Length: 362
Image 1 (cartoon, rainbow, N blue to C red):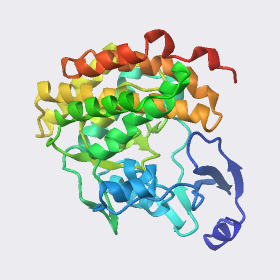
Image 2 (cartoon, rainbow, N blue to C red):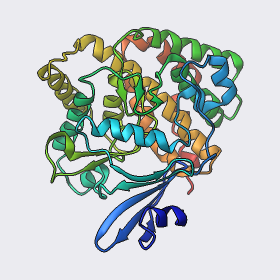
Image 3 (tube, rainbow, N blue to C red):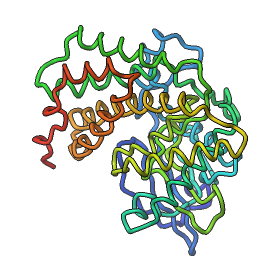
């Protein structure tokens, strides 16, 4: 890292590490003579590899979860490619000033510390921030997803293989933790089949660029800028080509903060209006069905991920988010398109055993 900083002209900078989250990436702020940049450090080999876009399901399975779920892995160059794509649409993704992709280092534009989550916690205008975030999505969704990002990074399809692998985290990690026993093969198979059936209802729809983790802790408020550039974007390296509903759901069913049904509805209506105004109107009934399916899929995945973070990685604080995520998921499963899945969850995982509150010890 020191050699990279010296070669990039930042060898004399003060390096201040920033707190991390669930990722293997590390960040630090570089300060020098009143100027500030961000250092991204993505340890190479810290994550399982991804797979070529034409890899079969069996080939992806052989490479591990990252390849199956279409995660970027430890690919610093993908982060740069996504940032360039977003900036090309007039959006506030950080500019990459210098990079050593082989070593996993990059020096990025510093977009500041005003995360939506912090601004809102300090009394920021919730309606204004969420409308601005929705307008960013409308800008991105004005065009279909590209097949590749310049210069040479494919934009993977968020396909059924990936989506089912994500929902299966719930039966793999959460169910044994909640019920104190292993998931049976029959339970896991029925869960997969029900999800395949639900997802098949929305196949064949329009595919757009999907950030994949679009929520209040990955958005920065930049009020000194104008229009869609007021929303700073980070943590987008796992972007895929998927449903237009996905990022809107990520925003309005935020695992880390309460989003009221009223705010979620206002954001959805603002999205529909913005899409109409820019000449890319959406069939509202079909879109709301897609939102319900994608919301339930995302929240089922998060339940599994948070259980895995606790059990495998010892990060017990994620259990405190489970009541909120289950609240979202139970609401999502109320849609008629998901009746069979709702019945499975009610039968297999009783509501009293969904929050794991007894384990919130650290």
